[in-house]
Length: 97
Image 1 (cartoon, rainbow, N blue to C red):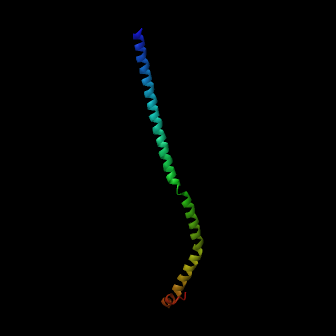
Image 2 (image 1 turned 90 degrees about the horizontal axis):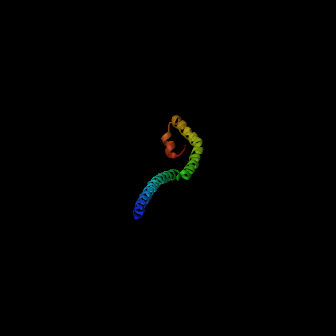
Image 3 (image 1 turned 180 degrees about the vertical axis):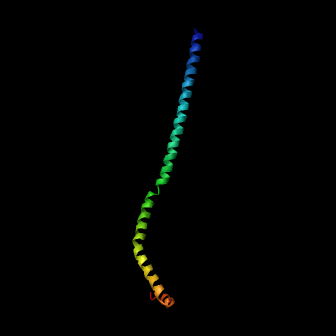
C-alpha cells in the first residue's frame, strides 16, 4: 500500500511541477508583453508632451504672418526709394526715408 501512495505522490508532484512550470512560462510571456506595451506608452507620451508648445508656436507664427504684408510694403518702398534716389546714403544717414 505504501508503494502505491509513494508512486501516486511522485506522479502528483510531477504534475504539479509541470503545471507550475507552465504557469511560470505564461507569466514571463505576459510580463514581456506588458513591458512592450509600457515602453510603447512611454514613447507615445514623450512624443505628445510637446503638443501644447506647438499650439503656442502656431499662435506666434500667425502673429508673424499677420505682419508680413506691412513688412512687404515697407521693403517695396525702400527698394523703390533706393532705385530712384541719387543721394541715398544721405537719406540713410539722415533718416529721411
